[in-house]
Amino acid sequence: MKILVLHGPNLNLLGKREPDIYGKVTIQRINRALEKLAAENKVTVDFFQSNHEGEIVDKIGRIRGEYQAVVINPAAYTHTSVAIRDAISAVGIPAVEVHLSNIYAREDFRRQSLIAPVVKGQISGFGVQSYLLGFLAAIELGKKKK
Ligand code: DQA
Image (cartoon, rainbow, N blue to C red; front, side, top):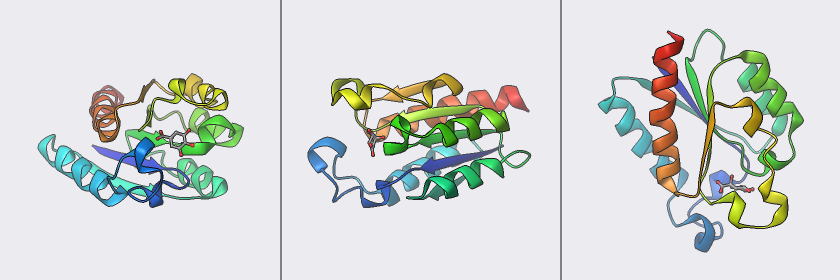
């Protein structure tokens, strides 16, 4: 089974970016923790990070047939991107939405996710654990998809 982990805009800056909100962990460390979890569960994981909406849409459009499930942190595009929402909907691969911070406990504009209605579920507010929990959920979804 192959699972894709997709990181949206500014997540390449993790570690330096607002550490009081997002913590000090880097994207490299998150990816290493996910690789370990993937190995323990005998699944393959690939990573993709982009700051560009169109690149994320293109990537999602190419995943059918290659991946059984997707973990996505759409970052700021969570709150704005109809295009990413439509891409997830179009490919029909089960997706799990994750957020490091609790988007419901922050500014009003972060309380709406345009992505949430087209994913299987959302995990928000647990820092790196959001990704790890989301990844475990994706493995279960991928098993059903096979
Ligand atoms: C985020 C929350 C978003 O509102 C924000 O724009 C991000 C990161 C999170 O992981 O907590 O860039 O998705």
